[in-house]
Amino acid sequence: MSQQLTKLDLVTPGFRGLNFEQAGSLLPPQFATQAEDCIIDEAGRLAVRQGYSDVTTTDITSNPAIEAIHEYVDNSGSTEIIVAWDGGIANDVADPEGNDISGSVTDTSGRWNFANFNDKCIGFQAGQKPIVYNGTGNFAAISESSGTAPSGGIGTAAFGRVWCVDSDLQTVQYSGLLDETDWNTVGDSGSIDMSNVWTDGTDVVTAIAAFNGALVVFGRRHIVFWVDGQGSALGLDPDQIYVADVITGTGCVSELTVKAVGETDLYFLSDNGVQSLSRVIQERSNPVTNLTGLVRSVLLSDLNEETFANIRAVYDAFRGFYLLSLPGAERTWCIDTRAVGQDGSGVVTTWTLAPTALCATRDNKLYFGGTYGVGLYGGFSDAGTDIRFRYRSPWLDLGEDVGNRTKLLKRIQAILTLGSSTDVLFRWWTNFKDVGRSDTVSVTVSSSAEWGVGEFSIAEFSGSAGLNILKTPARDRGQYYRIGIEASVSGNFAVSQAELAVKIGRLA
Image (tube, rainbow, N blue to C red; front, side, top):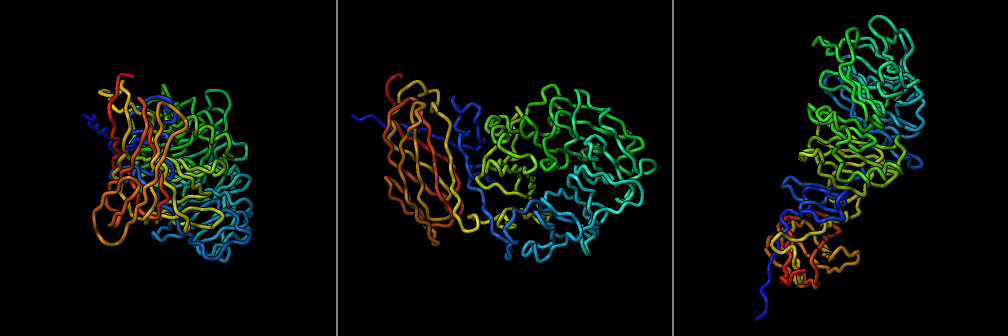
């Protein structure tokens, strides 16, 4: 009598995201060693990311990359999208060059960091005084009513003031209350000398942010918290501020990676990876613990290829992810902010799309920047090009009951959500070998609703983005297995479950 097939289930494979650090070991199927152009969807499944449509209808001359995108919000709640590139600043995404509002501003590089302040938009860039736009006319460099505005390019607007570091990257200056023109060193405006504060040798200011009623000044190896201890109506009174805490051993590499996540956290990129400020405070004895701990070696390798000034990030509250774009490495790291493990590691996937600018808006739009101009996140193609979903499991022993036995693989089955016709590539490997096998199942999705089952490389399904069962024959013998699923898609695609049908052999 032939031996009965045993079905070994992999429920919601890959939903815990990538784990590169232990990729050579046996891991649970909830991890992945490849999750490319993927997100974790609302059902907790590994799914294809969305793409973007090009909303710039009139290209900028010579197609420079968009370097900054910002949502300017005035006091009435009206909004404008501000975009910047090497040679201009505009308030129109369809025809940026035709709506240039840079005026007399020196707009070389386009690497502005914009902030909303008192009905205006303030822009910071290294080597220049802050620039200002009030919703009409053009941007212009701040014209001081007193003092000299700083030119370090690292700044923010918070607690009713503009805060910016000077060119020495040590002196943080703050403006008068609700007055971006007042930069006197005494009175309502003033300065903070950070060179007197660093506790572990010298450092430089790399970012300034507001967090839980504190002004946070980041260095490369320090995080300094300034508070006033008053709980004043101003939020923070600079005449009363003092250093409440200093964390050493970690810091921030670029202010453009500092993003508020909800009301109680900040994410930022350090030399150790992406970190959560609230967790750094909690785990101050081990500040290297970070959200990207399971992908640390690959991420740090990407950082070695990157110019820090080109790194961009965004937090999208509507979609629940933090995106870190590294254009030099041609990769975006996507961190799902809805699920963080007890060890502090996040659920991480990667995208082959690496925007040069990012912005999430109040009306739940997500804008990308690139040489194509401005793109709007949505749909299932990158400006008409299908997205390639790639998933690969870790090495699996398939459960303690059969882990020490040889398994004869007979079939691979997957439950997938499919929204478009495509060819699904199944891959499998055995016993830590680099060379594996593969088979392709062709799937047809039509508009009518019908259920089908595909097997042995022939499949036809109907229904729009419905659950479908795919089966493919697989022949191999081994103790440990790794599987992969790939598809070029133009619609929804998600993996709910995978199953290996095997015959159990002798002890390995």
